[in-house]
View: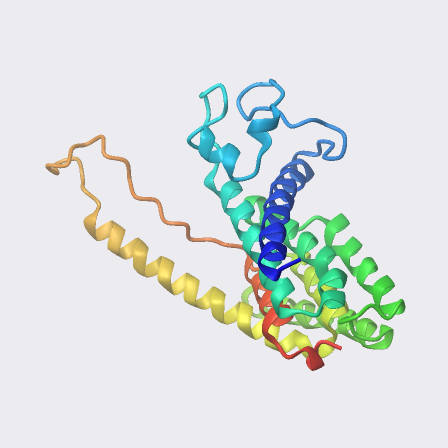
Length: 271
């Protein structure tokens, strides 16, 4: 099969997996069954048809609204399908086939963590701890691309200790936590999958990305405030205020940093 067809097929599979990940993340937070329960409308209990469940196409088909038209579907659901639709072909292009297969579960679990953390500042234990256990199992089986079992254990312990120590020092100095305990377990999971050599680069990349994002949001907020009309303005009193997101959990920076490590660091450093 020509490679272009493989990439197109992977893009389609990635979009489908992105739709599935949306469901898993949403129902993990709500406590609903994401295995057997059918997909339903956001605004009513009506079961969705096949065409409405199609990734990407289903969103555009209804203009981003539920089939009943009573509620807008958040654009992030479309974004996840598009990102996974691009991420899988990119991973296949960058990695050996065996490494790609080994890390496909990691990509899916990390995507769920990103969404739940972004939505509710929650990293579910069943995903982070489950991912840690799965990584140890694959390391024991000498799965391609993963570190040896010894290095995986060192990475898990090191990742846990690194974030825990940073948070402990911050709490000692500032009398409050700098990050949640979910980030500690997430870093332990990353250490298991990538080994101890990955910990500092991933943490540094995530910290730098978080700092840049924070500065950008502060500047945007100041700009929005400067141009925000008051009730005396010619724009009118009913103009909606400009909303700038000021808080993004640290896990949403750790996950992309881990993807960057997986895809763009030379393979010799992954083993």
